[in-house]
Length: 593
Ligand code: ARG
Image (cartoon, rainbow, N blue to C red; front, side):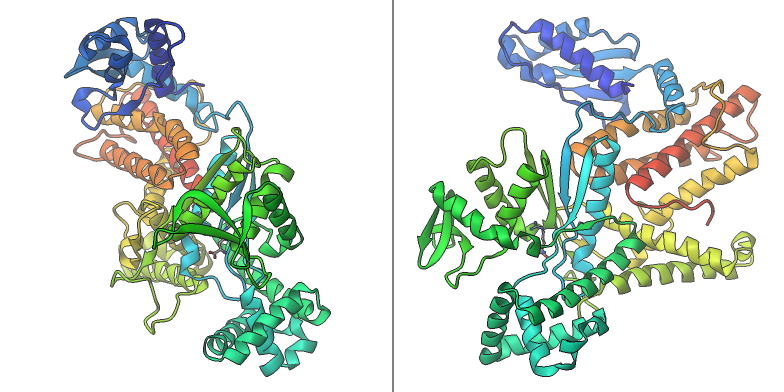
């Protein structure tokens, strides 16, 4: 099923095709939503672009294009404006028709892409041996959402947790165990993640301040690399315990991930270095094996090396990522790879992506995306810390969110007017608070531009109005309340229900609902979840205006019956869109709150 926007885009493409001589590459028409509705619903500036190819004034080209557009079904009016803009006004009947088709579609018009692309999406990927902290929030939430959206578009997705389970930090931990906690050597399975945190802190402290310790810790990495049985036994216990802790959190957060840690690639690292050397891409420089890519310089303007084998013989993050990308493309058959990390790693990704292309692992049919995200800041605009100045553990953050939302509900509960919440059992309150708390944290994370830093604020994210998770859930429950009163099931409206759009708020709401599939298509390509949160917020606001006593229309007590049914159908479609949209954002709706 084609969305209204898609129908417009196709009509433009056909018209443009007929206007250009053969052999000239066809530009893809950009059709955008107009900010001001008096200029129509959509606008295109393609005539300006075509002027270079057709050598006529853009205004003339625009008029010629408009004359050729076969859109009488979809548009009520198409105008040219200014230097050559084309403004399109959607026909109400075409909106009604489109909404009636999506009423029958559980996917609300979102199509499955014709060609299935195998994706590997690398996200969360914490370094083990430490507990997950606030720095892992964005990658974990965003990765889950992007995976859900791409899967929904019909693609296959492997969600990979590229955990840091190898390297210096384990040498440090091992050395500390040997020196200070020998009891662990015999019973490594007995310690828990909180011990790990303690061990890690102790070890790091020693490592940074005691050269002899640091030296021995490095030896332990070598011991581990040589597959020493005791070292491996302790290492495995560390890794298992750390992963158990991660997955307990993933479960609460509704996140699915398969662990394929850095250690998985150990055996392949020497082969990668060989391959690069054989192809003449790697050279030995001051004892280390390096790759020099054109165009990369360090601060002093000297060529910036990508070190793939250190002078001490060890391999590093880059070598592992090279082995991983090779494996993902050549062995797993991935054709789109998406990595979600802190934006400060952008150059690392840029460089090894480039190398993967040069060496030929990533051909033209492979898309490589790195999504870099900004930091979560505290109220002082510095990296978010606990009151004591420590790292904020992700576990604590999530529990605090749930606890705060429960407290807010109980506050509402004490309010004598809120008899409904008062009737909820403690269990139900906890269930709702959990969903609302998680929605608040996730939504506030997703609604910010990914590349920018954002300030973490409990008050803002838990607010019941504005662009927040709780507001979106509230908007949904409000419609569910209308449905209950009307005695209808939002998912099963009879297909012969009439839909007549007359009032401006009805039309505005219908236009929002109709855009859903375009928004999902956009996010699947641009990988920007805040496009979806913005859209859902706009939808909820359009619903508010429609349902508003003054600006909008009566719903439950509107007359005649056909109008009432039509308006209830709009309510149902809004609720379904909110629910599906939130679900793709990994947010569970609640039926009442
Ligand atoms: N463990 C890394 C970190 O904590 C992130 C890994 C991301 N994935 C990758 N393939 N490099 O920064």
